Image 1: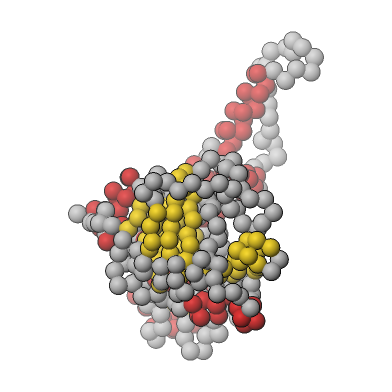
Image 2: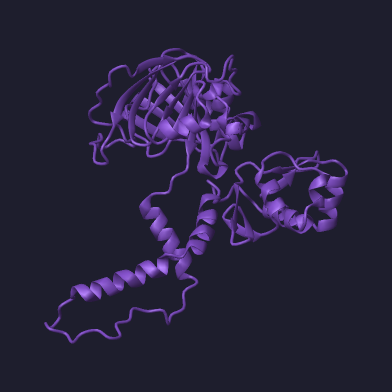
Length: 392
């Protein structure tokens, strides 16, 4: 029995295979006690502290704000912001909490039946009683894990792309929201709700300690994908590769763009774009691009291979830096490791080990090409030692 054939408490005793076959991207799933006896890795005061830090993406949503209904403010905040807030009907949302709190990042391991490159980040929200962000739709999969307190969730079914939203506010709140039958639940700590893309939902805090952890996933839109891939491919195409019409029939009407010409252009474009090896290389790069461009920062003073080997041999663990993203691909016998939007050809064993977020020790140096690639990735800011003299 493979690990993905075992029922998981996290999935309500479904196996990963059953969950992916019947729920993933298809329909919601409520899981009571997904993580039994769950203790939140962060408390409301710590979350508010994060929201005051420069560089942290945080939003404050006030249902009845000083400047109007559903007012959205962006961090960093300060203590005076929180002091002026009413006793209810507001929400604080902090994006990418996994980049700053290791115990939050560790929650990603619970979802290892999904490709790690598919996960985007973990958002955490706090709301006093009545706090919400309104009924809305997300265009990505999300697991909503109740961290502390209680939140009432109501679902409104899958929405059309053109479902009307309230104009004039900085949130995509649905104009109309009808609760589906048997889709009204209050979640306690450790309970979890899975929602596929496009499903209307409305979550309202029921307590003064309501915190919800949202595990979100990365799904590029058609617009983003086509534009990005065309740019990537375009940089490599020779100027001589152009539309051609050798053997065409004489023009029958002046100025007519006939079916044959349109079809020739269509085939030219499809043939140019349909390159599986190039799509894989582009896809690996785009799915490992950091969420925040400035978060993965190169070392100011590059390390050499000898220093890297010395750190490892002295027992220092080498870690994925917060916000860094890894994936690997084997294609026609060659292996590529994708890290933070860049591609590195390397041995398969090394690619697999580096894509695993577990700390690395000196035994990693036994893998072919490890010292050189590890040094490159440390200098790029994707890997790092967390020793006492480390400024990170």
